Image (tube, rainbow, N blue to C red; front, side):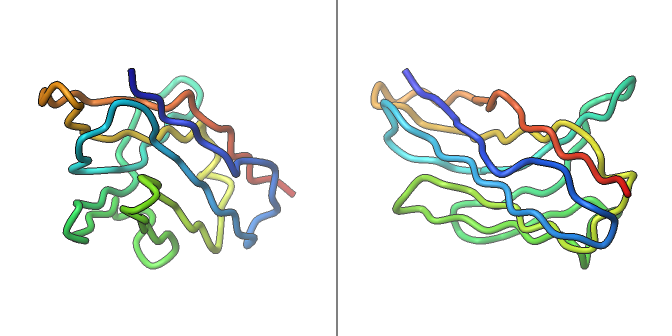
Length: 120
């Protein structure tokens, strides 16, 4: 059993910052890619940023230069620092992780989502 638990969402004014966290726990052998996706009302879920266990990153063009993904492999945790937030960043943010469990199978897990609302 593996769980991803997110925290850090909330309400912020345009130009503000938020930091999201997502901690994985349970029967984990190793974690490959960890990432963040977001889904605005009426829209599909889109990639925001991903990070491999080796530290390689990938960002959506819309967040480059404003958002930074990082991870603490010892804590099985991924972070998303969001700066210069815009109203169009408003969405439910989901973390995910490609996890090799202790039975040596790899699965993709999702967090429950955390709401980020950017409004004046």
